[in-house]
Length: 252
Image 1 (tube, rainbow, N blue to C red):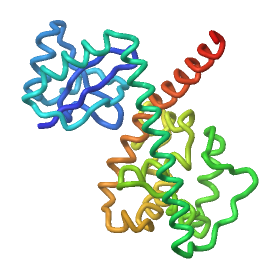
Image 2 (cartoon, rainbow, N blue to C red):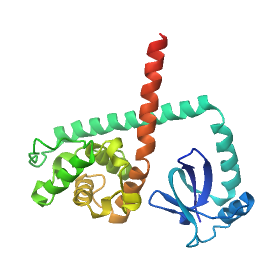
Image 3 (cartoon, rainbow, N blue to C red):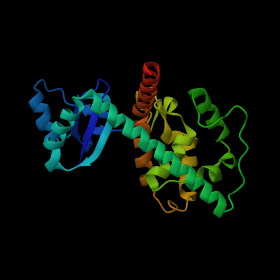
Image 4 (cartoon, rainbow, N blue to C red):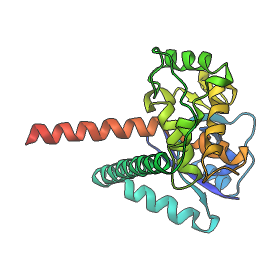
């Protein structure tokens, strides 16, 4: 059984077995004793129907059981320093920017070395990435006709592997501010991506990329779920970095 390191909306950190998590939610036992809850997690107890569900962000995945306690307490210790948390956020932002640069280079290379299909003409009312739910709805109406799928242009976005190809395409379709209102199953009154036409567009665009042409639905789905689960955290980090830059500029 693998484990996930998760963060709750209030900032609390916990390590839970993977069967406690489902589409950005965690099932949490109603034990009054904290040690009893920890023991339930360590023993990978099966969630019961009366357990409470919370929105969470998965920070690390596929944790080995033998590092359960070590990683749990070392990570909490690390988070005790606000400066270190800020550094971690900055490093994550730099990594995202690097991925975007790689995607642009791949796009330019693919344009130079191949002949892409014809671009679909988008209506004036639709501008990617989509910034609000009204635009998402308009895009869904546009995609009702499969011939409107902008597969060729999305497939050239690129990435180092399946995860990056999937995430880069999703980042081209949706901003972080609107993507946190979407998840795979539509829980918590969010839009269900699994039922949207954009899901078919994503799968087609991923498979048109030469790196990921033979991937399975399950593989794309896994990375799609994770991308939407991390949307709120990406938006929060971006705002935090922006505020930090403004504070530095003001200080100077």
